[in-house]
Amino acid sequence: MIIHPPRISEDKDGLLVAARVDFERQGLNVPDELWYRFPSEYIDYVSEGIDGFLVALLPSAMALGENITVEAPVSQRLAFGLRDYQNIQNAWWPDEFNMVDIEYRDFRKPDGVKPKAVGSSFSGGVDAFYTLWQHLARNEEIPSAQITHCLMINGFDKDTDLNKAGWFQKMYDRYAHHLKGLGVELLTVMNNLRFFRVPLIKPQGLSHSHAAPLAASALIMGRLWNRFYIPGSSSYESLMPEGSHPMSDHLLSTEELSVVHDGANASRTEKIEQVSRFSEAREYLRVCIGKPIFNVQSGVIENCCRCTKCVETMIALELLDVLHESPTFPRPLSRERIWNASMRRWRYHENLQLARRLGRRDVMIDLRYWSMLERQRERQRAET
Image (cartoon, rainbow, N blue to C red; front, side, top):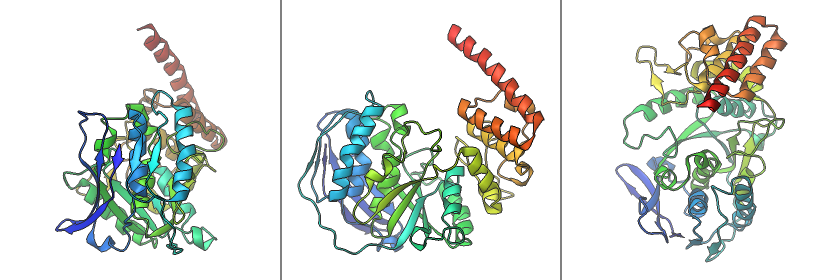
């Protein structure tokens, strides 16, 4: 794989930052260029460097087993960090990610000017809201750690709306208004990275490498912030190999921008408990596996209330007695919905622990009944 120097241009749709990508393997169904598109007013934020493109494409190169040649100067700190980043990915998932050589034509020298803004990836989910809440100026006593901007990314996962159907813009409009009231500016970036990931990386590998696209988008906007949080989904007590992990995320940093894995100090239910006290989060919380559902009359972004993540979250909100105050979950949590949920075992144990602590015997009974049914379902699956 050869990553060519990026170019920045402007047209009627805004700023375009693009780099041509050549693969050694022939016949791959991928674009000729990886591009990132921004509103024109972001021109002072966009980096001219290649660091973000290297981070974005590294998982695809590792999945293919193709060495990389980088045709523009790279951060020395990033180049050093990518050695261990590869080692970790390969050690955890050797069938998904191969070790590859990276040939650097040159290393760039830091200019000594560090941006001052602090950013965080933002999706509207529990982890994103927890990180935002923890590092708002009202809660974060260290000024250099206080979040000033959040970033929503359109182009690498289920939130992709490259055809501009309008739902990503609707989602942005709602969250931007909300975050502005908290003193935080919401930024967006559109990219076509999905078309370099989905055809080349195994399905499980997409989730096992999802920190790279988040960090890459931050690096493409490297002239804005000096710290960028990636909200994690597991606590230190339950950490397992994951696509975003405190052992690996920081290795995607440069001299100017520190990438920080955040939120491992709390379990999922502890995060929900904190976020549930945040009335604005209850009004906008989005955890659904599917695409956003917009209620035209109320203007609320609704969750489906049926998928795994919805039910797990609704159980915790019900235990905390705030589910009825959460308009993004418009459907009731019935006992049958709990019994038939595709719940994950560790989320079951977290919710059971919360139910026990709060003395909710009714929910404890339903959760234990789910566990019994799930064992039966597992036996049936094993027999077929």
